[in-house]
Length: 164
Length: 164
Image (tube, rainbow over all chains, first blue to last red; front, side, top):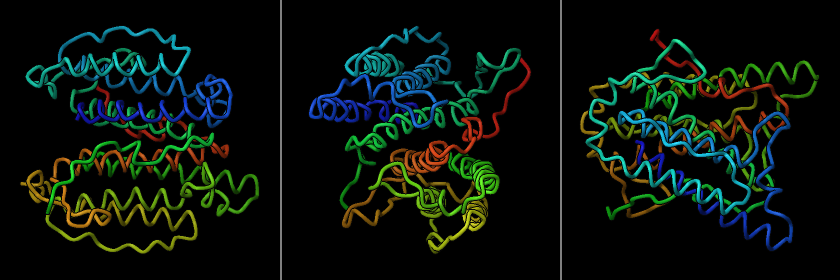
């Protein structure tokens, strides 16, 4: 399941490409898209990408008994967001299947819930997956709302169809 | 995993409640929210809810060797959308764990890909989960963009924290 979350992060590459092309074609600063949001009290595009990355990175780390690598939130261009996704993917793909043995029995601490923990399986199902897809979907929605020509297939990415 | 998708559908209830309250407080027709969208060529709130329901319903059915029950797309009020979610949840919760035995080896046909099938596990990971969260997130984003006071905790729903 973490590999599917990782794949969904990779799918952001198409959104980045289309966002850059859109800004270039219309001659506006891509930072406008990066700082766009759907509501004044909602986080912007850059944050949505950073947050999606961090949920996947954290799951790959905690569920394999590691401490997540620290990634600074300092991206100033879409190309830097692309690099953020790539270093996240590099980390999550470095975790081997065997390292997840026993993951469902692990206890994970959440920074916003001191004194509490969540079981590994609940963490994956209730935190990692919904949050990852939430933030990727919000990043997508912000671009879509601003006119970038992204479609749901960009969000879904590769689908392994085979001949019947 | 289908149970988490079902839970995420249930979480829409909070969005429905808040949308109704918002429309009532500001004295506008709730149909305005139901027909809202983030871009002119994107589907509206009602469709996002129907579609999320259908992805979960289809997965519960095909992966347990059943044909999905047919639900008409004719909801005209938020209360009817609430009923749509509830009948979907009733169906998916009627499927017992044992009925999913062998699910990953099943082959699922997709209406838009004639002559092709997708394996059960790929179907769950590449179609059901991303599409379900995508459409629920879009429903959420449409309300959020229109000023309804929904927050990410409404989207996430219950989280099983336990004492450390």
